Image 1: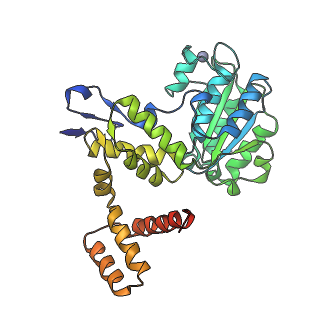
Image 2 (image 1 turned 30 degrees about the horizontal axis):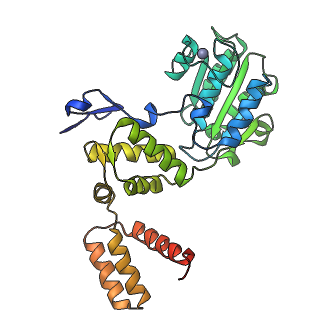
Length: 317
Ligand SMILES: [Zn+2]
């Protein structure tokens, strides 16, 4: 029996070996060091070099689709420059400052979601405070997510500080839509483009998590979850959470199929055979049958084209 506490980030299993509150995987396994990051090696390498040389720009812009690690990198960077053991690419993770940043309670790391702070007054208030020294850390860091959502006048307020930034200020900006960020802001930031994660990168992390947690799984099921993530680790981990709760602690192909309305592999093969035989009647009636069963036909089409792709690159076909 599974108890789900809606509206909070936790749910828990009633089995005796799962009596601990269940923490959402994306949060529990959020990388805390550059070494733990999956993918994005171009970006992390550049940041690591800059940190170890203590040669730091005042503005950074991280672009990329959702769930690829923009804010995760920004938080690790924040620890790197404010860790009490000194500026380096390997923050200790154990000093009060590192712990505060990891738990989202650092007073000198001001995290803003531009989507909900579009008023210039709000930005002005916040940026006016930038001139004051950090409360207790080396740097006062502004982490502004979805920065493209700022209004024009808010951008102007941001630009003013970016043009003549005080020594103790760092701006970490993140966006899914860099086209909407004014050139004047772009030109004052170091820009890093984060890539979608590959199927293998996501699958590797899913396996690592399942093994660490001691949950049972079928590898094919994890592969399907990685596919659904479509380059986003966060989306894949949300689906993994959902699958674990659906399967009451295990992740199996049959459960994923039931959960997502996937068409069974055998059915895809049958459909492919009808196509190869150029049997339009059989094709149409089979698709109708799948539709009646409430199968996910969009995904079936994707699976079918993946199958033909596989066949086309297999030797001797
Ligand atoms: Zn530290």
